[in-house]
Image (cartoon, rainbow, N blue to C red; front, side):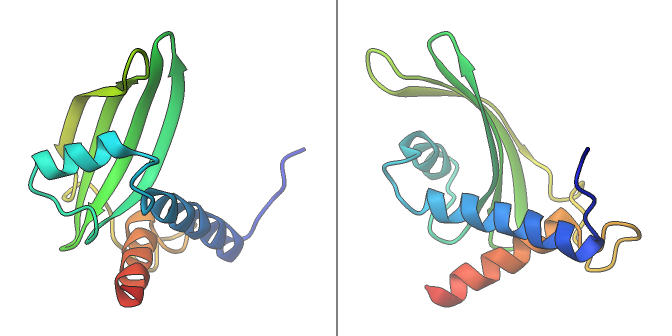
Length: 130
């Protein structure tokens, strides 16, 4: 049976997932291919956060789907195939500005704070620690 969580618990859990993802990205050795992809697009990896990342094992590496939040705020959805042998290389398959499609709202009926709102909270928190 699935655990039922109230809105505050769901928001806290989503916020923790965003914060965990953002903090893991701060180690440049974990996702070096993403640091390169950001630099190639003129985005500073230290002024934004990795808000979401899902990895799926592939035959020769991993397929990633994620959301990058740049200060502004600007949201980018991306997909990448990262091949690990013989050397780490990445092919960014899609990179799309999804800012206009990302809801940033503190009071959404039934869900409380939107993903966009929670991600911008985490971004502000990390920037203030800067």
